[in-house]
Every structure is written in C-alpha cells, then in structure tokens.
Image (tube, rainbow, N blue to C red):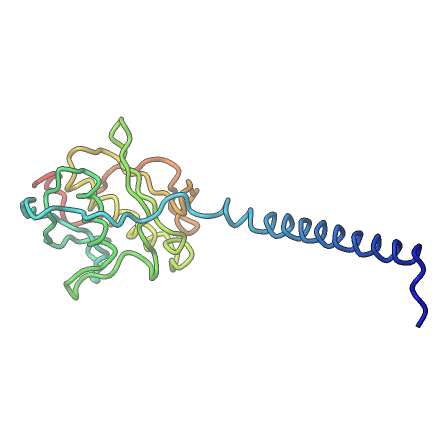
Length: 210
C-alpha cells in the first residue's frame, strides 16, 4: 500500500483542526442561545421567597385575634372568627401568622375560604410610613373565580385581618408575583395601599381590640 503524500497529510490535519475549532464555536453559540432562552425565566422569577424561619418563639405569649373570612349568609360580605397567634416581637412575624390563618381557611362552617387554591404567601415587609406590603404568588389571581364581591371578599379578608390586629400599621399593599398589579382578577383595584373596611363585616365596633 502506497504512503499518503505529505501534502495530503497536512491537508487532513488542517481539516481536522478546523473541524475541532468549528465544533467549539458551535458549542459556544448553542450555549449562548440556551442562556438567552433561560434569561427571561430568570427575569420572570419572583424576587421574594417564603421565609423558612420560625414565626414565634416558645417565650412569646398567645394573642387572641379576629380573622375575617367570607360569610355564608348574605347579611355581610365578611364575618370574623376568634383565633390565636403568638405575640412575636417582630411585626412581620405576627403578620405572617395572621396571613397563614387566612390562607388555611376558617374553622366554622358558617364561613368560607378567602384565598384561591395553591396561592402562597411569598413575603411580608413594612415601610417606614406604616404600610404593610404582602406579596402572594400569582395563583391568588390566576385561580380566583373573579367577580366584584368575590374579589372584595378576598382582598378585605387579608386587609381587615391584618389591620384589625396590628396597630403598628395603618394600610396594606397587596403585591402579586413580586410586582404591583392593577386588579386582583379584573375588578377590584390594587394599585394603592388599602385601609381597613369594617363596613362589609359584622365587626364595626372598632379596631385594635387586642
């Protein structure tokens, strides 16, 4: 068998090198495309995540609270239920305990759940001017049945349960997916911080009873 001419050997070597370089460039391009595709996912990710820290300590005393839920009867949109949280020195921890009760739903059969299925509390924080920000996952909007009264019941179950029991704050701002939303599910506005409204409940005798 005759030997491969030297110039052909050189040509094959150069072709091989070019193939390796091209493959490396192709891999780099593919990697960049994949990162570009993933980038919107990073941007769309909720910047807030649920805290895993304890919401109270064993030294915190129990605190009686009123939690508001949609009413089965037509006498009022919301009615209250006596529940208990623990009086953490951290305002946001007390707020999270209250919101957990709202999310978990009422004990009484005369009351209904206020929060749509799969909605999660992402974070709670308070501003220097006494506005409590509460951030829910997008399921609170996506899974909501809609309708003015239903949206009002959900919003004010949150707002009234917080403001009735937390004298340190005077307004609540609801965020969805870490951002401001115009409405909850097409009707009730969420752009501005909200005040407590006991006119839709059976508890107009006054707030901050605890």
